[in-house]
Length: 472
Ligand SMILES: Cc1cc2nc3c(=O)[nH]c(=O)nc-3n(C[C@H](O)[C@H](O)[C@H](O)COP(=O)(O)OP(=O)(O)OC[C@H]3O[C@@H](n4cnc5c(N)ncnc54)[C@H](O)[C@@H]3O)c2cc1C
View 1: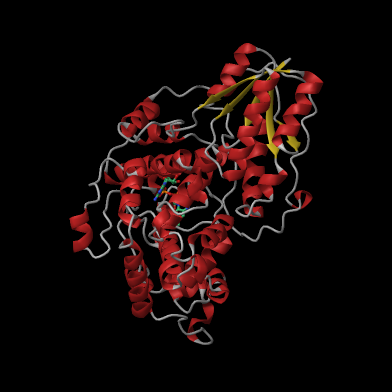
View 2: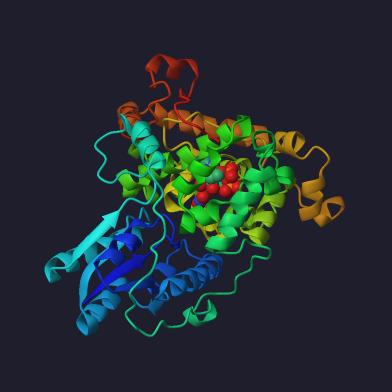
């Protein structure tokens, strides 16, 4: 019989309570399962695997130093676990809770049913500030603080191994993934994560609050920890505790974003349907029947005729990362100017973001499209974004060399497109029942720091969206 530690989006040995607990009970099988169903998901792409494989190589090395290298198996999770149980016997299954997409959610339910039926205790531990089976948002921030302040769990001193063949860490093409088109994307692995945190706190981040919004400066002044947090090579608590050793505006701005991370992920944890459905169901039908494939292709390929939009998309396609403000602009342009539904737009972005994190991603996609109902309507003007954040045109010229000849005219006119978008949203918001839906979303998901939505403000602001939440 063996203790199986199932690694998912927690690819580290430090601050890993399940690993430590398992190591106290008996021989440990540290397991990573490469799941074809996850890889085949519409939100998955080769860049995710490249990063994951880097993390797995590092994790294997670190676990080997403790006494048992990481075991990698390819197959559906349930089938892999069933086989291990049949051949070796699983005493207990250990893992961190995962707030993933619909595929991993369904898989966890199936594994849970099987484990119960087979008499195997599956011990799940929270992985950050997201609270499972949360009853309501009141007091959530306090719970988050308590979790972030808890002692970091040191890596186990050693592991009693199980002597299983570790198995190869496959290449993307062996898994049937297409080519990874990113160049200069970030490397996976706990070592790379620690190095990033060190360099950010030692100087790179000193002007974070001033330089996070421009794509010219953000690339160096933001932490770039997002893929590491998404795949768990470092825990949020480890980052928060290191960060709080320093004082200053840059660090408090960074602290707030780490809080938002879990605040947004909590929404998907509480309501998995928001990956697929509008937060406010009264907005169903708002864009569903208006999808224009040509507009989508122009946006996705970076040829909308708006230099800042196109430069951001081309930069993202190559690097697998772009900063928050430019992500918000890309999303807002697709949703308002091009009137595209957030789901296909969000899927395209998910495949491009190395740091794809379903909980943040789908909440943000809906927020930047106006379907949450509770957030201030932010329609970014791409011309103003260029003036404010790339006044010399350095960024735009780097990514659009044909700007001085052969560059297309804008596919939509800004003022006209925004006017039409506001009118359509306004029409939906005035429909019967929509206001009640919005209040329900506010009760369930809204930050308790902001003001609650009130009908009076709604009338005054025409669209009446309230700024109850951080927008980044
Ligand atoms: C449409 C859209 C989609 C997004 N999708 C993702 C995604 O799939 N994965 C992802 O990690 N982030 C996503 N973000 C949030 C944000 O843009 C990235 O977290 C950030 O740009 C990552 O770079 P960084 O690590 O250098 O961030 P930093 O500015 O250094 O922030 C540190 C960490 O805080 C968290 N964070 C920062 N900003 C936000 C925010 N606004 N909301 C929630 N958490 C935040 C992230 O974990 C980030 O790594 C999305 C934003 C938008 C507008």
